[in-house]
Image (cartoon, rainbow, N blue to C red):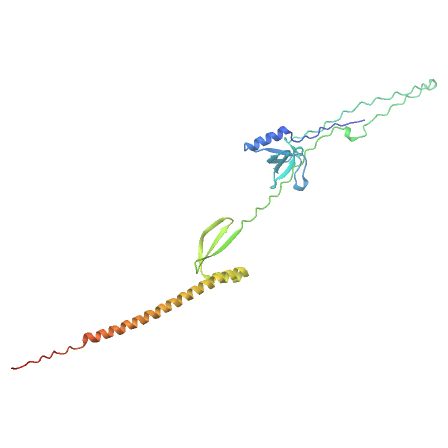
Length: 255
C-alpha cells in the first residue's frame, strides 16, 4: 500500500490576529494572503490583501486590485504567501515471494521469476507543486464622472444669478441673467415645477413693479397739480407788483 501525508494549510492563529490588531492600532499597514482562490474576482490562491479591520476571528480585507472590502474568517487567510508543500510518500519495499521448491524430477526446469511489482497509483510518485500562473491584471474600474450642478437663484425681485459647481466645489462667480432668459430656459427644459416656480417669482416682481408705477403716477399727478397752483399764485403776485400807484389827493382849506 502506498500512502501520502500532506501538511494542511493553517490559517491565522490567535497570535496572528493579535499582531494584526496591534499593527492597525499603530497605523501600520498589515498584509495577509488568501488561502484559496476566488475565481469570481480573478484572485488566485496566495493573493495579497490589505487588512482593514479585525473583529474577533473575522478579518475584513481589501484584496489587491479589488476596490471592495471583503470579510474572511481567520482559517481562510495566511500570514505568509508561501504555502506548505505536500510531502512525498515513502514507498515501502516490496518483498519478493520465494519460488516454490521444484520436484526432484524436474531439477533442470528453470526457476520461475517473481514479477516486478510496480506502483499502480500515480500518487506514489513525489508530487511537485506547479507554480501558479501569473494572474491577469484586473481591469480598473473607471472612476464615476463628477456631478455638475447648475443653480439658478432669484435675488431680490428682479435679479437672477446662475452658478456652476463640480461636485461640491463651486466654479467661478455667479453670473447675473435677466428674468426673460430664465423663463425661456425653463420652457426649454420642460419641467412643470420649475416653470411654475420661476413664473411665480416673475409675476410677483411684475405686480410689485406695477404697484410702484401706480404710486409714482399718483405722485406725478399731485406734483403737476401743485405746480399749476403755484404758477397761478405767481401770476397774481406779478400783476399786483406791476400795477401803477394812484396819487394821493389832499384838500386845502382857504380861510
